[in-house]
Length: 183
Image (cartoon, rainbow, N blue to C red; front, side):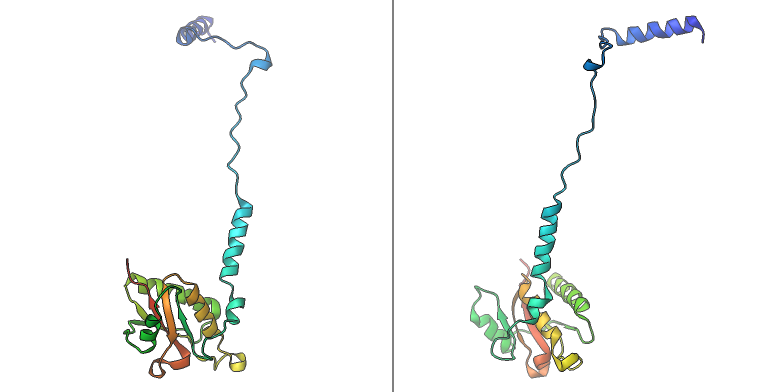
């Protein structure tokens, strides 16, 4: 390297840094730049929330769901007038959509119920029918999907009431559901 060019570069550098004060050569005065620690991940809280959600949607408790009035399924959201359920049972609401769960396993049926309710809410369909079947194809002829569907519906915020369908609409193999309207 040319010594003259090197001296010229040094002079140019010194002029650029001007009144900067060089740090002492000892290591104690050096600044150590360390990146900040990553944010804490609330793993236990996430685990607890997943466990609570899993427990709240558990099928085990829903299988034990006792039906009011013997075998006829009815449910009314707390705080609503019993007249709402009475009108629903008498067929005063027109069924605007229906979902048939025949042949579905519980996971597929749950997903279809969730999608169906979301679609009905989006279309402002207030009264719907869900056909869960009577359990004739189930082991022991026990209506597993019936009890699960009734439990799932009772857990949904948008469900105001449900009752067993009238005989012409499916009877014990279907449920009529009243959903909240758009706000």
